[in-house]
Length: 424
Image 1 (cartoon, rainbow, N blue to C red):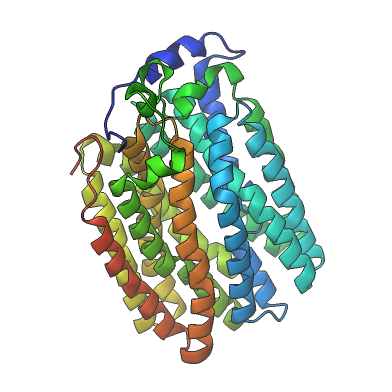
Image 2 (image 1 turned 30 degrees about the vertical axis):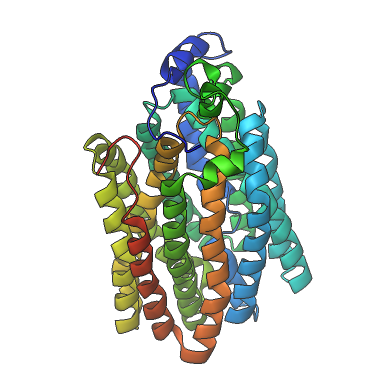
């Protein structure tokens, strides 16, 4: 049984009905969702890209950092499918955000206080498991609050707030590191963690339609039930060929893309010996571009040019590789990171949108998204060790060029994919 790619649902009407029965109006929950995305920009990732730059100044080599990223990636991959299945079944999606956010911040504090290898590896491994729970819960809450018809537009709004949060909080991290050093960075992390938890709890439980959040068809039935039988969830997803092709293309793209920003941050952090300030500038450039991509995403979805947008996003990677290979001056980070923000920003919004369209009515949306993200994460995690080896053997410029070229294979895998509602 193959999952039909476009089914009408009553999710929007369910949301309208449940919005009036909760503890707060739907508008208040949407504002809380916006604030959650804003503060998650910092709280979800802990030290994020700053960790690599910080550890580089503490004697960690590129190969060590690559092993750390790969180990955490593999652990996250193993937890991905259970996290997606839990998000499909759980009616406590808010707890799937609150508890991981608190744990990730604790792990970041341990890394700052004790940058020894066993502390860093142990805390980041546990934080990787916690972090995997956040995305399916967040996307499920979004779908459950707004319904499938408004899902694409809301994804764009979520990402716009997320990237705006990244820009503001990266600037705050830079200022805190310059004026107060590590204590300032730690204080800012604590503030964003508390704010993210408060925003999560402000989303009224009654505004979340948990059936719609799973991608269920009209009447709360799965496609398999409508057809007179049930197929195991993973088998249903496995037989969805467009979903498989999308997964392969994202695996290849993120294999090429994942190490580039990290390697650029490492390269210039060591050269300039200002890890937090350097990484803030590098990351902020990409976040500005990603914010523009998020604002454009609803227009892309309305104009039915999702396929073209994905193609252009993937083509940004080989161009980044060529630019980073050709220019060694710090100024090269501006065009390189602008392309990063546009490419990765668009894919970050359009991936859950495409997965929802390709699995609509199955009742396994969160599991499907987790499976796609697991495959994507496999590419990203495995690339870090490869990138560390290439940098050690051939240097940064050649590594940038080779990883950028992988996107051409990703594009070839994506071309047969058709969007579920007829988009081109």
